Length: 141
Image: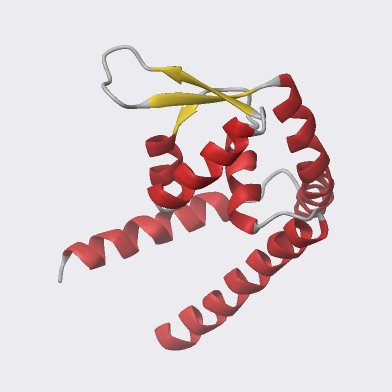
C-alpha cells in the first residue's frame, strides 16, 4: 500500500512541477531563475542562504543567478548587519517589473486552481506533515 501511495505521489509531484517548468520555458527563463524570482517577489528581503534552505536550491545555483540578476539591475544586495558575508537580496523596481512579466501567468494559474479547490483545502498542511515524517524517517537511519 505505501509503495503505491508514494509511486502515485511522486508522479503527481513531477507532473505539477512540469507545469511550472513549462511556464518558465514559455517565459524564456530557466526554472531555477523562476523559483528565485518567485521567492523574492513577496516584498520581503531574503538572503541566499534563506532561499537555499526554504526552497532547497543549491547555494551555488542561487549565487550564480543572483549575480546575473544583480549585474542586470534586477536585484540589490544589502549587507546584513552582524553577518560577515551574508547579504539580503531585494528586487529593484526593474526587478519587480521583470518578475511580474515572468510570474503573472503563474499567479493567474494558481488563483484559478485555488478557487477550484475551495477555501477549506488542507493540501499544504498534509504535505508539511508528510515532509516532517519523511525527515524523521531519514534521521532514523
